Length: 107
Image 1 (spheres, helix red, strand yellow):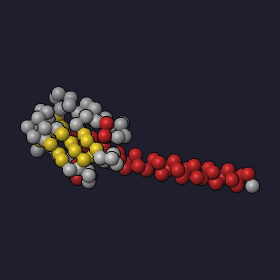
Image 2 (tube, one colour):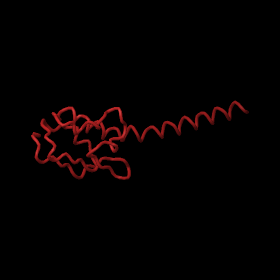
Image 3 (tube, one colour):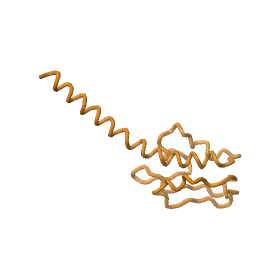
Image 4 (spheres, helix red, strand yellow):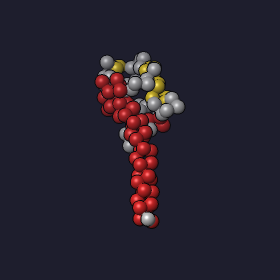
């Protein structure tokens, strides 16, 4: 009887941990999209230095605003001497409402 209960408890704990890990992976898709943008840009003033792909939550990056669900809603990169091109991964930012890129050399 004790072994059966321990097995159920272990299964319950495993399920809870699995569900807890799903949300950060989802949030990281926003980070992956922004990191792809960073990789495509020349950033001589290192404005995007905080955009570190090892940080799961892009909401901690400078120039990025997120909503209450930790999804990227705004990226402010106007007038930062950036050059390069936009990447198709930006289309994955399905909560993005505002992308500011003025006064740069971005195609």
